Image (cartoon, rainbow, N blue to C red; front, side):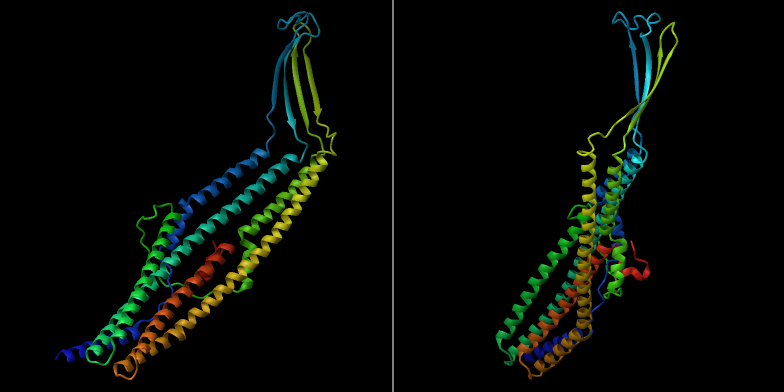
Length: 432
């Protein structure tokens, strides 16, 4: 009676495993439903982004300052004759007087405009730095989100595999009780079950670390509650390398910042050459001489660049070298960008192909192999090692599927950070 009951339990467990193998499909990798909302929150509250934004806003205020005239000067005084007493001799001595003079320093025409344009270019550089910081924080948020999501999916794979192992152990115990299997079969299955649990614990830790990083990017406490949802997301990059390069050279913050540096350096050369021309000060004064006629004074003071060979000429050479430096830096930035784009594109392309290979070929074949080995083991036509090997292989392939899906999304996230374009939403106008 007991033997029949165990055989019945074994058959039930067998059909449970077959049912799980046949019905456990792999869904497309998902993107959390709340990701856009979290990105919007990060752009609003993240301290790194706020600091970059404030730096940009601060530099914008320098444009008007650099284009303004120096502060005018007002001089009030008197000249006494015969005594230091104020206005002594006023009205009787021609040199005694009291009056006021107003002076205004004026840079040579064109200098203020150049200084203002240089300040504008610095603000535009800061704007691109602000964009770069925002894209970097967004990329970190997306990457943490994807790590959380794929670790959760891998955990579900291990939970299904655990149920399958428990069913296999039940079959092994039934066969062992009937004298058809060895005790080491049960021990092997239990060992693998412990290995699965160890992997599940590690995945749980990585998922929790990802949620802590998300909280950090949102300026929340690391252990703050965080509800994360999932929905279907693309697993294929449709953009070509040519399109990605074009977007990068059009919108990459790094390149646009380097371009603004070149423009600023060119203006710096123009300003240094302008400094060969003198600045001047206009002054106008009125003096009261008591009973004598009033006196008026107007004058122009010039700053003569007498020592130009040691100052202005060196300043021009300095700015010319800086301009050359910024052009070389642009070229280096462009080359580095092209390499990183190519590297990330190839990584995304390879991971996408592997994802489809696992989903379309490897995992279905592994599921069929497991089903066949279970049937053969139940009928006594195969040993337990075949069942164990098939089950572990299927588990490994399913976790590898999600690992490659994660690698694909991380590569695309790097492309998005470098180009400023959301490539998985490009067909729906995903440029940000």
